[in-house]
Length: 354
Image (cartoon, rainbow, N blue to C red):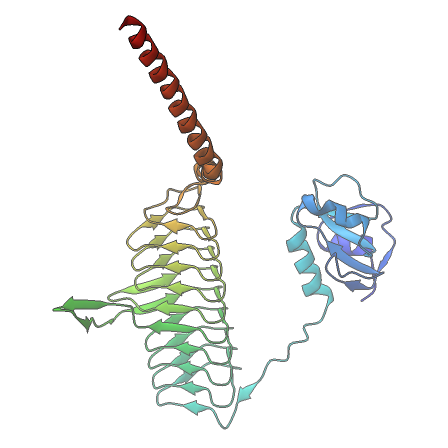
């Protein structure tokens, strides 16, 4: 890779501040960058790193007016940097092609054009696989399951019977889509399984991380909306509906029949009870315990989850509890001393009158 800063700026509709003729020979993070590298700065509060980085130039937001080295100002530095990587650096990942002889293909399976199925993958009877989809070793595509076009199903993924996967979906290793919902009726102390006869629908352009579990609906559908991205180790229970373009971070858990709106962010280790709604554009902070419905366009945090500003005030009070307890103890001691003085003075007056 050898391009001038001006040439790179034109690719991402950026504005060069400084020497536009310097030659970029590599791409790296701002801390790891070497001479000749292009880096990026997504958050202005890390601007001091530009003083110490070895990078030849840095992509920044338009908030940055000047810097100790040439910059390209853009609307979204992280997105711009990703575009440059895609355009200028070849993808080193080698994708498989064709159907391996050790793959197991069931009866009445419909295979699209230019698909790849690696060794020891199993595609059960009646399944449908779309064009250019890749299924890696050890994955299982269940009875009558449907997988769309241009999907990547990494090793050891399980797509259970009748689930529907849209186009351009990426599913990472260890994930199970369509496991039974956690439904039991307890009678006389015994737990009796309730059949889970629904399905899961994953819409287009969804990415699902490693070791995620998405349960099938008891009836109807569990739905993951178009463009949603799910991190590793997330649990999504039966009949959950997640709107388009939401973000769900690692170790979050969503209980059954909860409805998540569009563009919602659920941060790491947040937990949601069942049968609630979360409005569009809401943000659930890390480790939030969400026990009731959340309106649109707000951020909640804490347990039980409250509007973030309210939760911060509450946390501030809680952090002061040891000092408050010490102050109360001192006040009680002073009150006791005052009461004793008053009592002693009253006794003396009584003796005089006597």
